[in-house]
Image (tube, rainbow, N blue to C red):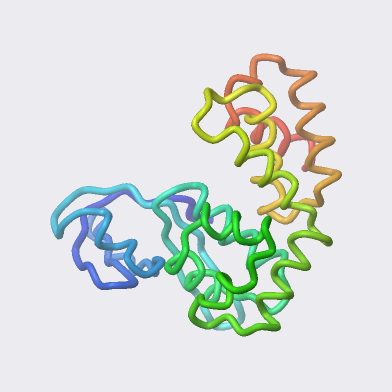
Length: 203
């Protein structure tokens, strides 16, 4: 799996870039507007990625932040009928924070304005994220700590969200994070460290 690439911007288009990594050009699809925010042709950048493999399709998707990538993975892995194109449209239209707020508030009107999302798809997204995955409660907790110094609880919450986006069930994610923090107290200072420790328990 290719998790990130670090190289020189060789081409910048509205929804994709070509990144020159030691002489090899990687075409990376990004949310609309994302490529322009990376910089100019010739700049060296680091792009978070996800390699999507399906039958004869091999596509590299790129993201400016871990939050974008986590939401992308959550959508394509946990919401039926939502593939990479729809997930990219969501990220390019409203961004992770606005999307999460709309789902938590069940704001169907805002979500329906996203290009490529019909009424049934919007209803399914809210239903499956809220009732089946149970991720909205974690989003609500994350929103309540915005702008504050990350506490141990908020770091644990971030790790749980990352695990859910990777396809783990909410109950299993909470159990693994709690166990990881109790067995390794030093990990509680970083969401990434908590995530790595939890993943080791889930493997």
